[in-house]
Length: 312
Ligand code: NAP
Image 1: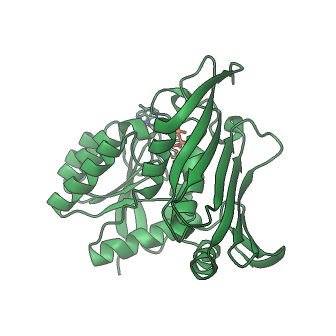
Image 2: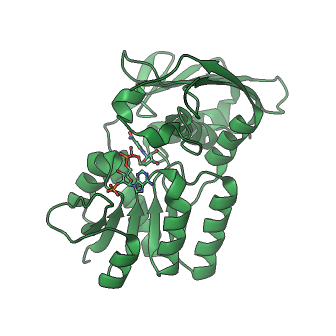
Image 3: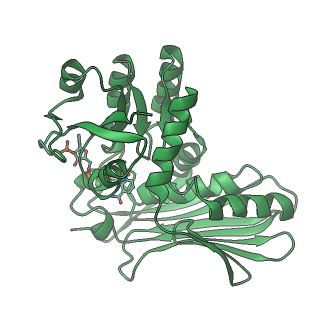
């Protein structure tokens, strides 16, 4: 089958690190154009300043992958759907649940495919963890998500603006794994959000979850954005039968009682594009709202503290 032409909207860090190389290597997609306010292209494809210019000039491109910050995504996705495009969206999907609901409804009304990507939802270690927890139950869970904002979001001031999520931008990746593998719903009991005194979004977050389950499993998470020793992207579970399950490397490796069971490489973006190709084939949308709901509740329930100022 001929490759499907896709356009990238927003040629920033994640588009350059992941989307463009994965499309270059894809059997399903080929890059047709980019939309970049700074005029950044790739491999000589046409470059447009706005999505509207792309849609007018190249109507034959009917797929877009939107890699901008979340604050402008609702507007860009609506515009794409209205132009008759099928759409893949980076995470976090939008800045509010109302916007996400609207996009899902709008895509359904227009009979378009809308795919909300979540990291690590398509990997065997995460699927195996979900199966183990479904069988054995959960006595406790602890998420530790620590990384350096200077390494992963260098100079990106939008992460510190309202709607920029702060450390909850990577933290929502943890929640997207958590909500996928947990065998019962979880809710935010309390949260403490520490903001740099000169910024609008948190740099450190501690969350206690509740579940309404008999036995009251202990469930908590900590996100931190000033970790310079390397990434710690770990979720540790104690099952109802006393086994210790550890998902490390952002869901890439699984160990049970310290024995490595599964480990795989960095194929998450290739897997996401493969999944998008399947959705297009079947004419289906895929938007899991659970991580966004839980993260919104963190902001609703969170107590705020001011910490030291942040400078790049
Ligand atoms: P980024 O480097 O700041 O890139 C975003 C790009 O969007 C900008 O370079 C710009 O590209 C375009 N853009 C259009 N309107 C914009 C506006 N009003 N403000 C800022 N940029 C605008 O950010 P990123 O790290 O690629 O993140 C983009 C999305 O991917 C975010 O939702 C983020 O959570 C997600 N993500 C990031 C990472 C990571 O490690 N950084 C990992 C996974 C997912 P043009 O100049 O080409 O228009």
